[in-house]
Image 1 (cartoon, rainbow, N blue to C red):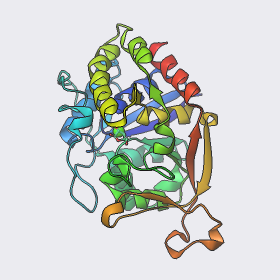
Image 2: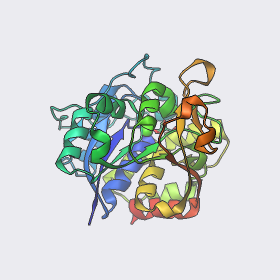
Image 3: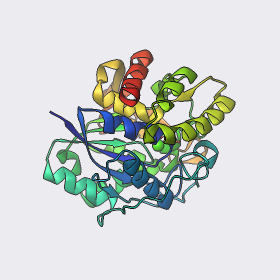
Image 4: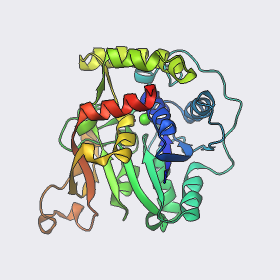
Length: 315
Ligand code: BDR
Ligand code: CA
């Protein structure tokens, strides 16, 4: 039996890797891609999502366009220094022949959940604006969803967008605080684990050397991303942030987790920081009281996650 998922995404170089992994897995059924601003503007991320499906020969999968800006603040702007001018490196991919469906992202998420109550897993790998919008419009959404597996946040480690905040959460802290506060099963796959999952040069070579259309796209994109990561983090390889969510969905046993409510800072210089409670709930300060436990990934078997990523991308 396959597990139905919706990937909410801002492609994005590591988004592309995650999407190709999910499409390659016999255990997953990608019901749709919903798009969000983030790594690039919404026009670009939506066009990229359509193009990625076309490249993978899966234009049968719908794309629903989502938010162009956060729910309560201004868009911080494209991360072109990380993902290139076109979101997938410096080379522009060919314009897709297909178009997004009529429903927007929040509506697609809700109607998909209604069609299969309790079955659908949401995998947001961009800012959490679409999920927050869906929650605001449809307060019954949480009871219709199986699980939410988020790439975002930093529980016990520094941020990447700022010293305190991870990029996806930093893009829309108010939305993230709503999503972490709703009554559904949420797993946070944040920098605590994704900074340990590194695709090295040899693996990059194997992934981009398969001769497929996906490999050709990744060849240009990964080398751009590699330059940025190596300069900033001083490592030899690239972080597999978004692919970690797909690995978690496929094999949660590769991750160690801790259960704790999470609040998201929305003020001042630590805006976007995810704060776990990490103490008994009867000792919770008011801000954490009444909040559900989040399944926070704190450690990962990075070798096995990389094996899984490679197995899906290379075969
Ligand atoms: C996250 O931010 C984006 O740049 C990546 O695509 C990933 O979703 C990592 O912090
Ligand atoms: Ca992303």
